[in-house]
Structure formats: C-alpha cells, structure tokens
Amino acid sequence: MEKEDTVHTKDKTDWKRWLQLDLAKQISNATGLPIFVADGDKIKELLECIKRVPDITKLYSDLDLHKEVSNFYIEFNMFPPKDQKEVDDRIRKFVNSLITQKEYTAYIILRGISGYPIGLKLGNVEFIKPDLTKSELVKHIEYLNKNGNLRLEKPEDWNWIKVKFTDYRTLYSSDALFSELELAYSIISLFSDKDLDTKDNLGVIYSPDIIARLSPKTPQNGWSKLCVDLFLITLKRLSIISNKEGKTKLEKKILNSLKTYGLSRSSTRIETQFLMLVASCEALLLTKNDKDYLNLKLSEKTAFLLLRKGIERKDLYNKMRYFYKMRSDLIHEGEAKISPDDFNYLKAIYLESIIKLVKLSKKYTQMEKSNNKNKIGIEDYIECLKFGVRLSSVNN
Image 1 (cartoon, one colour):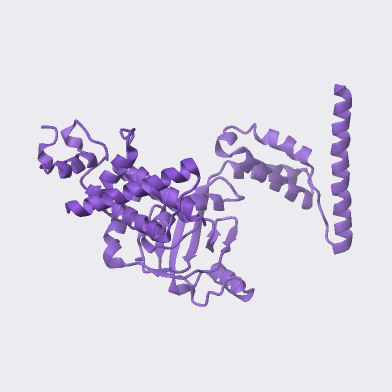
Image 2 (tube, rainbow, N blue to C red; image 1 turned 30 degrees about the horizontal axis):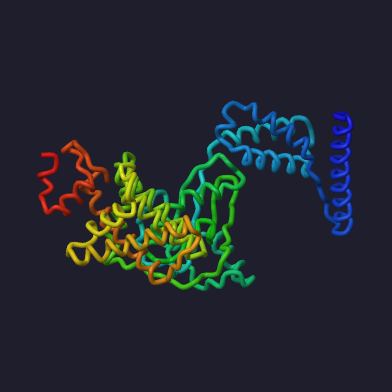
C-alpha cells in the first residue's frame, strides 16, 4: 500500500510538471517570447546546499532564503553561463551577496504632509529639502502621472524624507524599509492626524546594485500641515529619544506605545482603530504592577496627568472608564457602538498624554514607583498629585 501511494504521488507530480511545460510552450508560441518553468525539486536541492553556508539561517528566514535562491535559479536558467568558469563565478558572487550586509537609501515624498522642519530626525528617518535632481524619482513621478495613477503636479509642495537602512536581502529589501518607517509614520500620523501606511509610499530605494521604485497604492486623500507652535518642542524631544543609544525605561515605553498607535491608523474599521488606540494608552501608562483594576488605574493616571482642577479630573476619569468599558464590550461581547466623536476624543487624550510624558521624560526615567529616591517614577509623581504632597516627601 505504501508503495502504491508513493507511485501515485510521483504520477501526480509528473502530471503537474507536464501541464506546466505544456502551458509554457503554448504561451511561448502565442507570444513569441521564451517561457521558462522553474523546477521546484531542483530549487529545493539548491536551497539545501545554500543552507550549509555558515550562519546563513541566522541571516534569513526560510521564506526569504527560498525567494533569493529561487530568483538566482531562474536567472541562471534564463541566461545560461557560457562555461564552467562563469558557473563558478556566478555561484560565488551569489553566495557572497547572501552573506553581505547591503546599504540602502530611500527617498520618499510624504504626499499631503507638510510643515515638518528640514533636518528633523525620527530614528533613521530624516526630513530633507525636496530634491528634484533625483532623476530616477522624478522620472518615476512623471511615469505615474502620465498613466493617471498619481496626479502629483508639485512634489516639492510636500515633505520629503530620507531613510538609510541595511539589510542582507537583495529581493524584498523594501520590507526592511517598512520596518524602519514604523515609528516615524506613527509619530507623523499622530501629530498630523493623517493616516500613513508604511507599505504605501511614493519614492525610490537606491543601493549599489539596484534601484527599486515605490508606487503608492492609494490616491492622495487631503492634506495636513504641522502646527509648529504646538508640537515642535515635543517632536524635537522625540527626535532625541528615538536616536539615543541608551534609552531609559520611560523613553522605551513612549516609543513602544507610539508603535502600537501606528497600528490603529492602518485599519479601516473604527472598532479595530478604537481597540488599538486603547491599547496604546495602556502601553503608555500601565505597568506590570497594574495587574488588577486596569480600568480604574488607567483612568486615574490619565486624569491626574492631564488636568489640575478636581471636577475636570473627575469628568476625564469617568470618560476613560467609559472608553475602557467599550473596549471590554468589543473584546468580550464582540460589539460596542463607537461614534466618531468618541474616537476623536480618545485620540486627543492620547496625543496630550504623549506630549505630557515626553516632557516628563526629561526628569523621570520610569513609570513605576520606586523605593529608590534616585529613581522616582511617574507613579510617584501622580501619587503626590492625588494626595497634595510635595514630591520631596516620597520615600521619606
């Protein structure tokens, strides 16, 4: 029985291979173009050989390595080497390329975003002066405009960014770019109140070997100009934090919360956006010590951080409890009526919380309370506000 199953599987594989070859032949005859059908078994054999290269599996996921090997195999067969020397040279260059970290520079136009100062850096993302001498980018824009896919008449009207990053991959290096954009796009989305998708870009990626073009998936939708008077101080502080080598616990907490916030902008459903927005508030204000009564603790921290007057604090406290209940209803019961007004109100609260904690990060290094007088946390600060005592009395 086992032998029959093996034969049946082999026959099935041969049939698929025959169909692929037959289709390739028909397409080639119809188009007059050479068609090549990759042999999956040979790709697997080559992949197993490549995996013997020291540390290669640490540099690539299985999927990424398979993509690189498949691409090499296809090019190798479509453009056969002239002799054994060329075979050896191409294999050697391919293996060396796999284990060589490559440097990339991307130039991206933030359609609909303006007002950010030139030179501001958010991680590896730097705002730069529009540069129409970038011929590849200009040609790319002209091509997209000509085909009606862009409609961008004055690219210099919007903010431009430059992103430097490294990656071992030759194929899909844009995935590394998307990771680099996560934090910056989260911050820009928050302070500009405009959705930015890390995978929806207009730009060009340069490297010593290739030039990759980034085409937007969606049309430009509205515009937003940064309110410099309100946000520039906070943005400059976030620039410092995001580029620091040794970040404090509080600084890491702020950045992680902002990345979570970015996820709330990538969904089209207001329910999902709302859940991620509440999660962003939790990531910003709650700690591992807040194991119980999360609703009350999140509401209390928000109220005391942002407002001074008792009645205003009470109103905000109740509002946050209401939002947390809506969050629980969504998760546990699968339904909750979320209005745009409620969502926008919570978004404003989150923005104010970020501004406040970024400011406090100059003085405090952690959110948690501490028994160490030299490491007083934001929770100590909030407790002093609650009980109307001086901060100097903490731990006395």
